[in-house]
Length: 237
Image (cartoon, rainbow, N blue to C red; front, side, top):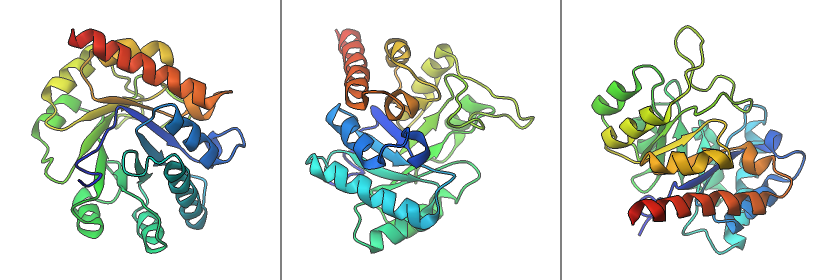
């Protein structure tokens, strides 16, 4: 079974070198995986292409060191060139996440192959109409948000006028019902948000600071995953 068929976006870490309080990215990735995180995305607007390739390679090694390479997906944000170059160097990169203004998903699919994971940030404006009508044949999941305004991605969830649109739990409930593919939600997500977020029916949460910026990343990851699983179990009773 390919990673695409086995994709689990329930606990999704996004990070780059600028998010780790000076600690190696691979140490944070390892801690998150030990804590139960199921997906990792390398994202940086500051690192060079070569730095991102190296960072992705170290993240892949960290996941493999925990014997989770077949269970935890490793993605790169936006940079198709980085994914292709890392793969040429033998790095196990499972796919890419792109935004509405990045490289089109059909191009990503064509160059990365049918087994690759391709995630897309759902359109901010007219969100519900968008997910109801967009062609999802080439997409594996939607990223939606922000739940709160966030310093790690200040342009997240902006409308055409440059205003940040945050998402209510009610909207996310509707989104989960309408979307034909899995949905992961982020944007300033913290431990206190997890129970109510899990109740909306979305497939997972993504975050940066709550793990990458935590004093004890593994403990923080474990608490987040535990809270998510506990609420999902309660809802299924």
